[in-house]
Length: 281
Image 1 (cartoon, rainbow, N blue to C red):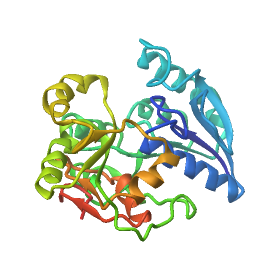
Image 2: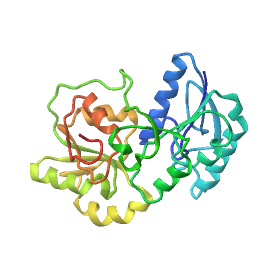
Image 3: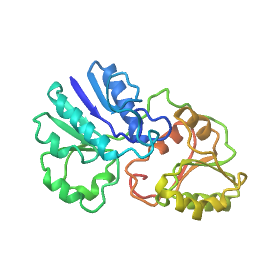
């Protein structure tokens, strides 16, 4: 089959540092190529793939030129697929809702994998406007707020078999891996680690919009001893970070769609301590 994959432009495919969606897209494209399909990846120009790359923006927005307009980048993405849509048997989109007005009118079969939360205002109205659009969820729980959507399946994330290997060591610290925003639970992670009298290592990025939250609620607790901020880590850095931990803390306060870090930790042989929202159970 001739398949187009539409990736978000915030991160490269695969991402240089964090970026679960883009990492899953990278694995998906590589496996489709391995199965003999012809795949074109529409993504940022710094992406690397076993398929054919159609670069629509020079560099991933988050690590690229400061002040770049995301709307301009997305406009070029939509123009790129509009010009080439007729080349494909199916178009697989991972960019939320942006493509629906365009692809619904091009006459080429398409589907959309939803990677984020779906309980936000306005989304039921979007679904009603595109009743024929096909969607894939990444967990059963994720689709609950939009049961009226045309769900054609749930496909949970997986990992390449050689991505991680389990450690049998006990681990000497608790780990937190994710965004430093309130919904991800870093404050609770700090509280849990202090109550357990164990050191906490935080591997995370600080989104620009969360700078005030970080400085007020998290920075006062970071002393490089009991609570250590190690910053963002690459995919290769996840193995030692997770494998050497006694457990991964995942005390979230949001309807988690899947939680890739949970299966990454377990693949490293690291126990998971998590709250129950969303897909966690």
